[in-house]
Image 1 (spheres, rainbow, N blue to C red):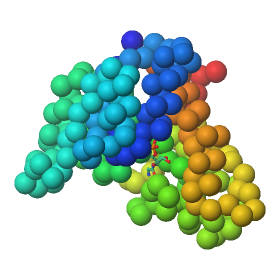
Image 2: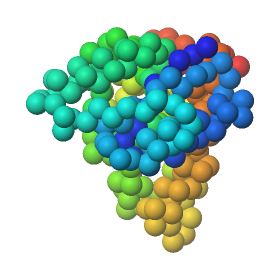
Image 3: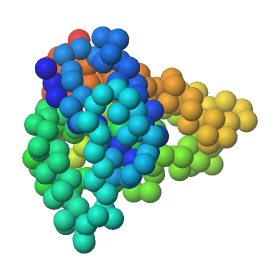
Image 4: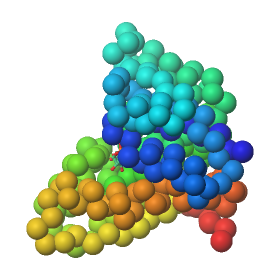
Length: 208
Ligand code: GAR
């Protein structure tokens, strides 16, 4: 059984997709051990509570400096004995020590087709604003392993989504979530839980 920590910052619709797909058996061999938020009072923590999953807030506001916060984050994850960390809209830079300790065991969902519209400053709605500003016709989402760069780790899954005439950032964000993110992230977790993903020379190899 793959033990997963899901890390969140806000709404938690990707968390909800994972909860629902574990419940209906689409994600197999997986248990969500804990949900960790860096913000108090977010909807994602409500979703965890409703599903009977431990929900914990580790807020930088409660620590004197970044180092202390990073240590608390790592200690919290470690205390749940997890095999995989899933960043589901977690808008915090992951501490280097955590990346070292969980090499190729942290995955992230990013709302674009990496390497487009990714890296520092590209998160949430900003990604969709930038895509519309550029006038691209196809966008999408990517699930990737987390390394020390920003959105640079080995890519696991990607799915394209069409931009439509008159899209606003919010409308586009919703379509990318519905058509790509909420499917890709559960699919990636199921693949990892069943030993179908490995990393060779900085790229993933997927077993069918
Ligand atoms: C999602 O669109 C996710 O891809 C994005 O934040 C949103 C969180 O929504 N993540 C990033 O931009 C990471 N760089 P959610 O809380 O409803 O799942």
